[in-house]
Length: 283
Image 1 (cartoon, rainbow, N blue to C red):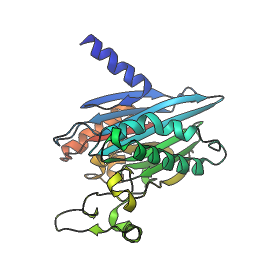
Image 2 (cartoon, rainbow, N blue to C red; image 1 turned 180 degrees about the vertical axis):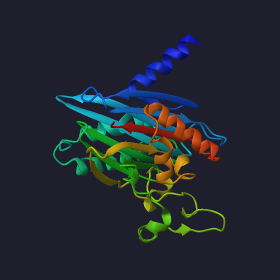
Image 3 (cartoon, helix red, strand yellow; image 1 turned 90 degrees about the horizontal axis):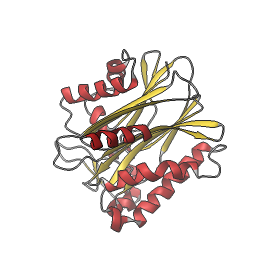
Image 4 (cartoon, one colour; image 1 turned 90 degrees about the vertical axis):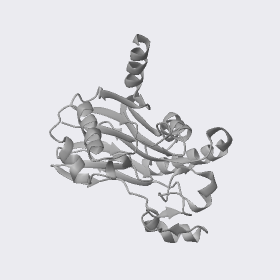
């Protein structure tokens, strides 16, 4: 038992999580008012946990980066685990990351997806969505995503979505141009080729001709009006609106308590999916 507790604490320290239920926290060295907390809960499906969390502050020369991500796998836990281990390194290794950040992130997403497809024999079938957030010196937040994990900022108590939900119905035209189709069976959500409920994802080699891994990227300047940011998998967004999620945690002063409380509220609303959440607080 003692060994397991030490192992969990080590994972919390480096900001990695993926099990039935894990939690962790951290804070900026540059600004003591910036903190983060995360919490994960395994869903009720008959498969292993497919959500992975990355949350840590990293010093790069004289700059501080807050690196945060939710990776939500489908038919796979190997691919989101691979993303957790490699995506941020690929982004930061882009030579123009500091000068052309948006382009660097887009290129790193494409390169990472190509590597996942090359390793399909080892990583298996299925794929993963992703929402990433990079906080630069506590002043600028760069959010990117593929799929339906979501980033929401609370500004003066009001929720603002920073990411884009990549739903098959919304991207039907581009999917059909690639030779695919979008199904709309009664009682079910729209699916690419009758299978996948998102229009963009990493991996999914069997569907890749009809899918995109191109991220949407948004930049948010951190000013005095911004209170916190929520990154979460769709296990939360299936049962809560953006504003409901913001209202649920805005009175929580501790970021980790806020993330845990949000997950518990999603469970109380009968979310049966894996649930992962990161809260980044600025006040």
